Image (cartoon, rainbow, N blue to C red; front, top):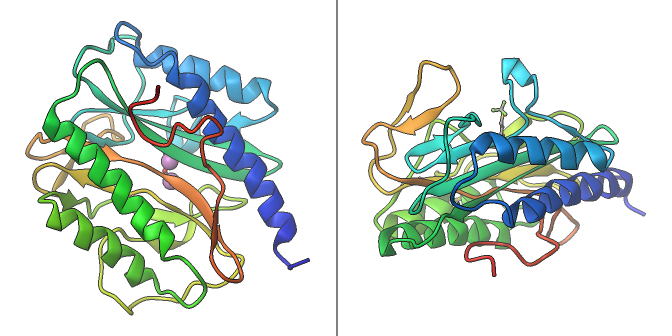
Length: 257
Ligand code: MF3
Ligand code: CO
Ligand code: CO
C-alpha cells in the first residue's frame, strides 16, 4: 500500500461522481433546453448521490456547474434565458465534492449538426489533453505538459488560452501547482507519485486573447472566435498516471452515440 492509496481511493469516488454527472446530462443536452436546466439536473444528481456541487457559492458563483457556449472560453453561468440551438457548441464543467475530495471534469457537447471547423477544434482540444496525459509519470516536468499541448494545438492552427490553467486538486478545489497548457520542455517542477491535478486546455479557433464579461465570471474570446475545452482530474502513480474522471459510458468526446 502506498502512502497515497487512501487519497486516490477518495479521488476515484469523487472523479467518478463528476464523470457520471456528465454521462447523465448527455441525454438531456439537446436543442430546446436551457443551460439552467442542465444546472438543475446536475445539482440534483450530485446531491442524490451523496455529494455537493463545488462551484455553488464558490467565490460568489451562484450556480452548480459552468456552461460555456461557443465563444465563451470558460466559467459561463447557466441561465433560464439561454436555450440550446442547432449549431451550438457547449462545454459543461462539473465539479463534485464527496468525502471532502473533489472531482473536476468537463466535456464538449454539440447541438445538432456541426461544422467541419468546429469538429476540428473539438478533436484537436481533446487530442491535446490526451497527448499531455499520456506522457505523465514521475520525473516529467510541468513544462513538458504545456509543451505537449501547445505544440500540437499550434500545428493545427489553433491557439492555447493563457489566462486560465489546470490546478492541483484534492481536499481543496484549486491548489498548487498551476498546470499551464503552454510552455517549454524540461522546465518547471517534477511530477511525483501521489500528486493529483487537472489538465483542462482551453483552445481557441482564433487568437488566444480573452475578455471578461461584466458578470465577473464569463470569459470570452476577444476576437469572438469559437473556443473548446475538455478537463480530466488525474493522479501520478509510481510509473504513470490514473485518470479519475473517465466516462463510465464511454462518452469521452462527441459524438456520444
Ligand atoms: N470547474 C472549474 C475548473 O475547472 C472552476 C469553476 S469555478 C466556478 O477549475 F466558480 F466558476 F464554478
Ligand atoms: Co479545473
Ligand atoms: Co472544471
